Image (cartoon, rainbow, N blue to C red; front, side, top):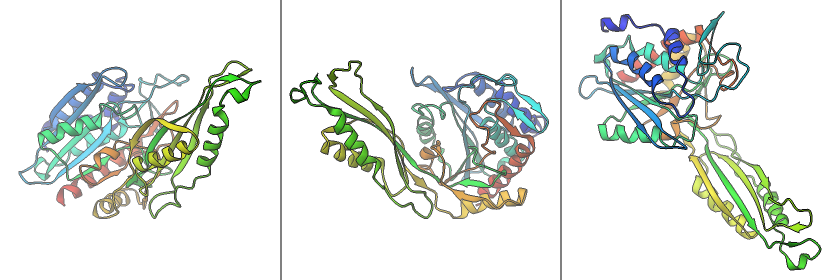
Length: 382
């Protein structure tokens, strides 16, 4: 431990500093300056880059690494500094952090500037000779992730800095800190459907071809599909119809086009490409097609084993809570990082994430520092 580390603020103070930097996705600039200033005194080498253009950019990413002895294990913390728009109705400014009682209020307190602050506080007490530690921090996890973690991972490949294990600080906890650890995530794919017809007068249907009944039949067939019954670690995949549209202001015109959109959250029984192929075949049978696809991530699972076990042991040692291993919820940047190494997710309680008056429990934040420290030390020890 070096003397500069001793003078750093605690996790709550660091979280306040990060919250005070507005960073609605896509984020860049000041909030990354703030994090870099926290890490540099701890011996981390900072790599920063801005990439991408509107509408999905520009996005800033940061990779910070403190090298241990040659050949030592490499443990990575990962997260994001961008936040969702705060909206209206806050008791205090969303980017003016405020402590009230046992809580720290501000946009990003939970998701996930609080976790990042806890990560920094955790490593300050880990000797540099314990092993290599890094931070993988993006500025667009809350957005389309076009120029975020995927870009950052390519830079890490070029640096030859591939971690052995990675922990993402997403807010996974529900009722108590540490009660849920994510060991995987479902995949997500959205599809836009089109059924074309022939426009005509409603009084002369024989001269037209109405696409609406065909689309209705297709959607009924899709809605009846049972994709699977779930697995040991995943809930059943589900298909949801999320939009239907017929742009037809006239009451006496048969439309020429009917469209719809669907979203599938799928487990590891499927791939995104396989689901697109299946829906495309069903659409074609009704005279339609899949016009657009947005595959935001494949399903993945970090098989329960030594890594998840050491995470659970660290939680139980600090809180007495026995965690549940879960794959529930939406997507996260773990869907990319799993290509590097085993990855798990652990963070603060998620009840207020993305909400007005988002707030982190200060006692949870302090406990998370201790949990993260235990995990990092055990991971580096191998």
